[in-house]
Length: 111
Image 1 (cartoon, one colour):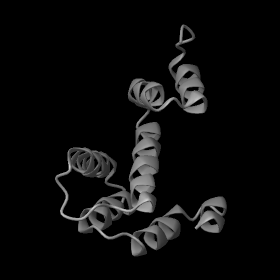
Image 2 (tube, one colour):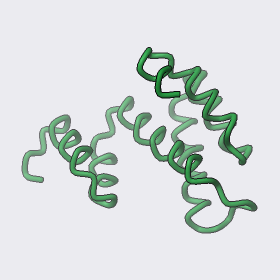
Image 3 (cartoon, rainbow, N blue to C red):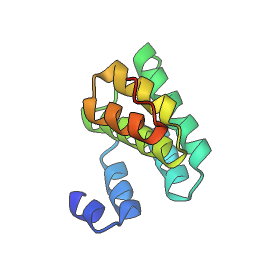
Image 4 (cartoon, rainbow, N blue to C red):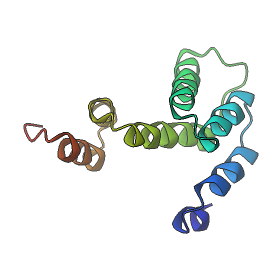
């Protein structure tokens, strides 16, 4: 998958990532992402993450699947230029790189 990402073939990379996922909601969210339904995809990834945190999913997602949800959620918010959302996420997860990027893009140098 990494090779496809480096070549700019994110659709192929997402399709391959989807092959190793267990939950049907992941396939739906990735499909929305591939077909450019950004707002719907963000909503679906958010719903999946919330349901997993609350334990409302019949089978637990793998670490790879959770990582896919998280990374796509961040990437989609980047595409929507929702830097305040990313900044909040960066603070919650303790990601200095993401925090710096969001501060730079939002021009919020007080952080």
